[in-house]
Image 1 (cartoon, helix red, strand yellow):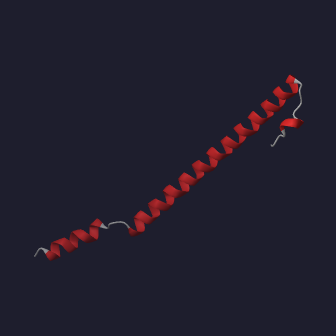
Image 2: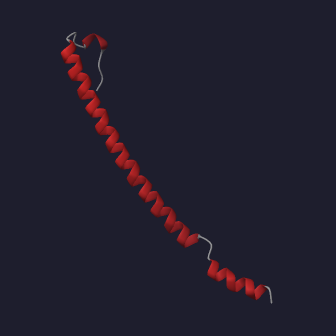
Image 3: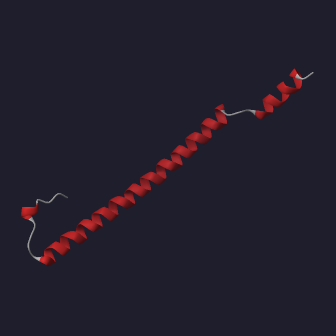
Length: 71
């Protein structure tokens, strides 16, 4: 919502109404942004867990290898 300073009304009640409407819009956008951020974090956590499971250290395999190398 863009306003040209010259086009704003001089009536304080109209200005209050416009300010309240703008405040509502900003709160709605902040709520949507928080939801998107939460979803993004969930997806990122799931992705990182999958990557760690597939490519992370495999201690079970390493334990056998260590026993073999130390003989």
